[in-house]
Length: 102
Image (cartoon, rainbow, N blue to C red; front, top):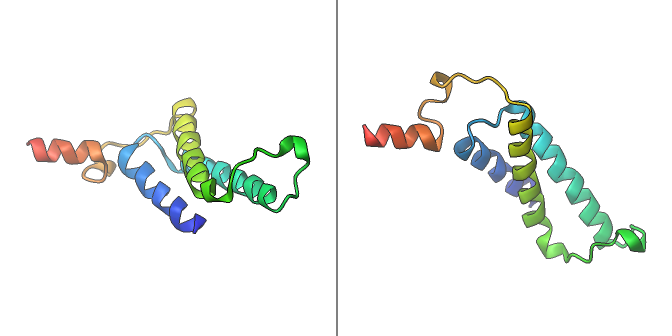
């Protein structure tokens, strides 16, 4: 389930945030996977009591997806990657709204 949900995050990031490049995307994915590992360890009570966040396993996918998106966008802002606008034409929400307006 997590891979499908995070696969949707890849799509959302590429479509809604054209500034997010490959490096930022993979760093965000890594952040989501690390949070997932932490929450799974929590679920199986393999963490020390002070590290237990008390989050139900139901929220795992939501938290991991949000972590991936936020981490990727922050990395894109802190470490911008150069991408040509022509390469993204028609592939992002911004270029689609320009095409519809024309």
